[in-house]
Length: 190
Image 1: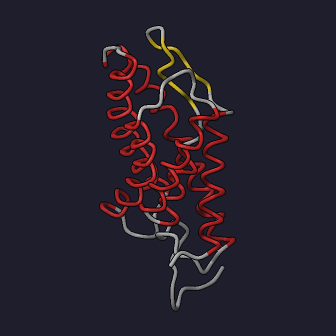
Image 2: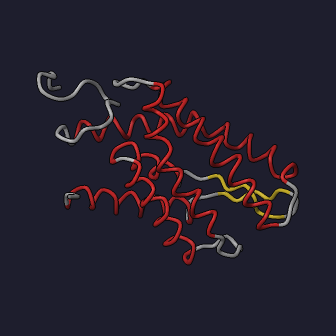
């Protein structure tokens, strides 16, 4: 059963994602259409997945997109596959990091996870879906989208690492996938 505190955190992360994506984003045109949005809206989605698991991360991603679209659609039509990619931003990171790293996770483990997630979701899937939606060739959209995502990876990684370790400091009873150090019986408190 989901605790009330967890639901409150997920609601705050959803709202934070909506605000960061819809109000504090920069839209850059590629090929005459707005195809590259630079924002920190994915950070709360990824963080929700890392802190609360892939189901919670997927729910935050999908809800943030569904709630945010009517607020500011950035001039485009609603396209369900883009909601799927938003959900995948919360689903894949906790699954990916468990494949190749053991807790406690380091900054580079988190960085590799963010890079893999961004390459699969933001560069490949979102570019494919945007090319369908905007009727533009993938090769027109891909180079600048790839460059934009590569520039954001170290920033996302740093923000996620700091947020996760801060969360650990605030709520020591909540498992955190080991981002901030050893946990459980016998683990020394800080």
